Image (cartoon, rainbow, N blue to C red; front, side, top):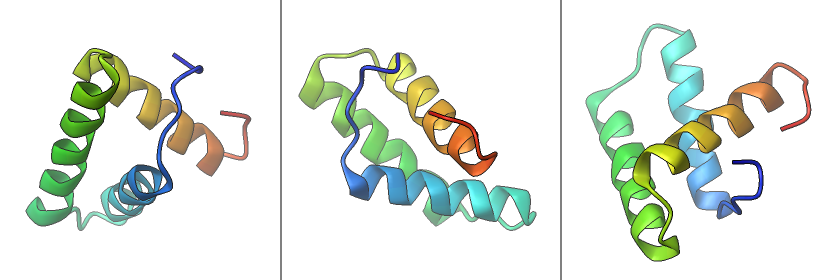
Length: 69
């Protein structure tokens, strides 16, 4: 999963969603934007949507924890 390249815009969306989630204020708009971007990236790269989502969350959340993504 770590070999998936993500555009900065998708990483930024997931970071925003993760911050909102941790603060207890994740909005439907943010969640929808992330899901739409994940779907578009999966379709563009030919990687399963589930694989893209899991790799994206791992990359963002591990980076937020100060770990290598």
